[in-house]
View 1 (cartoon, rainbow, N blue to C red):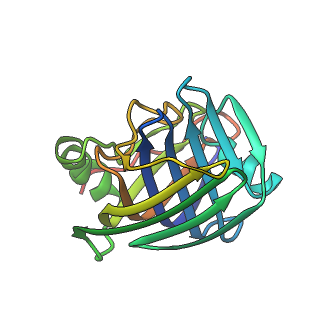
View 2: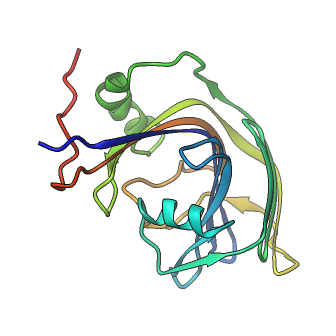
Length: 207
């Protein structure tokens, strides 16, 4: 069987919703196979799924994992920490600050994330940490900590959007949805792309 291709990313995922019906997830990746970059997954009130990316390479990378109705390459500027996000991406301006939550700084084996953390995250946080994307990419999301957004400003086209909240209803771009509260998650990600035969390789065994 042809081997699958594996990749790693490290950064933060910020997720929130707006009263107007927009749901937004920002990935800010300090380390990735294509270098540092940020992307925006955005579902509007009409449920149109849009990807904002800083260049064609980032757009192709993210669109190779998730599904969108439209992809736009726009000017990006961003800084991100485990408790803050400042982003300018095309018409979108985001400034968030988060606190509280939990920190889980110890790296764990990926099989632990799949078999042990997965049911806990599903029950307590309403999220999936292991699964297969709509295009057949297997993913692991290993949280190193998460914080709830307590202060934020979001503008779209220069207009203030008011208070933010949970990213609901679902965006439907991947196999999971964000937590039920606006949040910033410090996360390590493992990606396994199918080999040429369309398979993701040998499944992990439980310890």
